[in-house]
Image: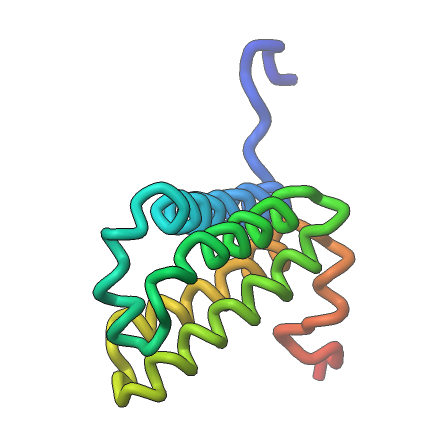
Length: 141
């Protein structure tokens, strides 16, 4: 019998859930930082926006969209909708870099990662999502 002050070892499901929360926290930090820069320091991203073909005047609406995606993702009841919106946002960023022939560039790879991480976090956090996205076959043969 274990003494009261000793915690039992973390089980695999709990470890996966903690990893899911960690991935989700990383996504949230990235989105909130990006959204706040777009809103309060658009001059920092003006060159990048112009390079990708977007007018710098769109920084504030873009920041609002990013923060909306983050807000939807952080609320458990709307987390899947938030992940869908984040994936769409990341896909648009990938397309913008593809259009200017930055195929495989660090910003494009970062956008790809940003599109995948929310789903990884949700997959690890929520048991109900795993049957919808099976990573292995259900047969035991």
